[in-house]
Image (cartoon, rainbow, N blue to C red; front, side, top):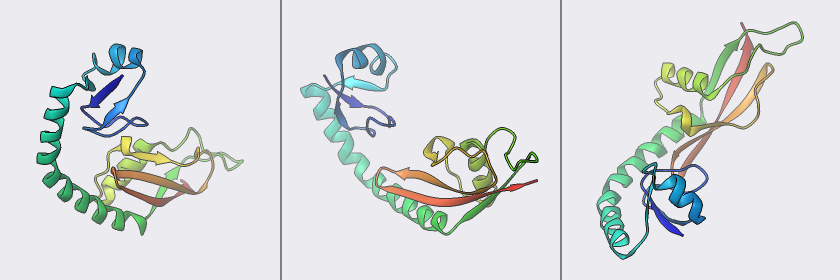
Length: 147
């Protein structure tokens, strides 16, 4: 079954992409949630017109994302965490904490666009990937220190 996505879906595609999914997934989840529509002649025609109109906006968004990516790649973020005697932290550092620290530095990145490469359970340096645009991704480092 082919559907047209109305919004970005991680692991499936981006807005206005025509993707092939299993019929049950499309009918029971994507379409009722308003995430996708069935791809037929009329909806594909409508999608093509929407893509034309969105192209101009996408260029600006892409340029903004590239500028943000350039700033993020040179950034090393420092986060504090409570640490036990063995050097392990209590709990874990999450994307929400990283997003809040970025916001404090003046970078507005949605936490759902961040992906931490490894579980942060100890003090050290870790890599975070930010998916800023469908064609722009940025990696930066975070340093977890004891408070």
